[in-house]
Length: 99
Image (cartoon, rainbow, N blue to C red):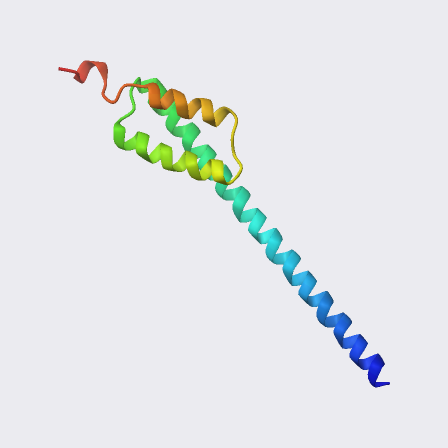
């Protein structure tokens, strides 16, 4: 009888722990993928805006570099790499503002 009770409670405990771990993992993956999507979206938004303007200030390039590094750490890559490289190639100031 005691063995049955012990086995029953151990089974419930292990099932609860496993369920908790799976829940936490799903939450983590959701946050990770959500953050990756937000970083990708922001880089694309900045790219579209700065490409139209024809320049990208150095402070923005630093911000993009940090965003891209974190995006890459989260597993992102692809077209955002090309966009980031094109942003780095843009001049720091508008052509009209150059002295």
